[in-house]
Image 1 (cartoon, rainbow, N blue to C red):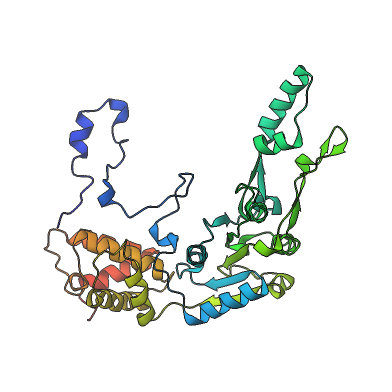
Image 2 (cartoon, rainbow, N blue to C red):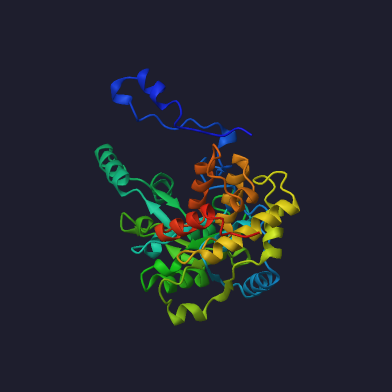
Length: 360
């Protein structure tokens, strides 16, 4: 199988380029050499094929928690190790129920409620207002909304529930709010208040010539209420008032049987993988995971690692029976960086492999 060496021809390439371009040329990878990527309808990237929900196999316990949240029209709060599929659930639900693209929001430490609702281009609006004044006219609320307001995440989902973005046809959306535990203290409750009311205001549309714009208040349709998935890495405690208004579920690291189901479902990523091959990789993965003391690898890292190992033509046997004299020995060891994210763990795993301490 072909081995990829992206550094091999760097010196030759540098000799043929302008001095200012030396060492600045990007890697040239064909689509076959890259991990499968996917994109939203607007062309923006969505991390990778793992995030599409393809082959996602929720446990029976998680399915029951989802059903409770859907029946009660409550947000589902998910905790668990990074990489265990908390965010993936949102994409799985959107695909399973045909609810279209997920509306994602990555929480920041300075996030405020309006960040989940809309973006306002104040600079462009200011510039346009000055031009309009010179022409002796004013923009209508509808024009301001079209030109300077972009609805996002929860705001877009509420607007979609009344068909504003879908030619008048109402539609349910899945809203993914990642790492809610990073949010300022008041934000979680603000989010749930907006969701429960299915309503929010856009102040920029409120006053025109002393009159209120008719479209400044957005009120959604409860029949198409968004499905909200919140994830938390438990970095800090969430407000009790917020927790009371959510359905909660903790995702444990899947066992071997569940991982076998997950790998079998990743057909576009792990093409042609067999059950014995999956079993061997999973057994080695759990052995490595037990040795890691820091951030332990989870499902996400397992899939990436298996894809990389197979792309390079390696098998678990190459790890167990490491041969330092092999031409690609160092390449094999470099793949461990997918599983170990701290220097001490990377060093310990490398030593375990090179000393043949890992047993089948």
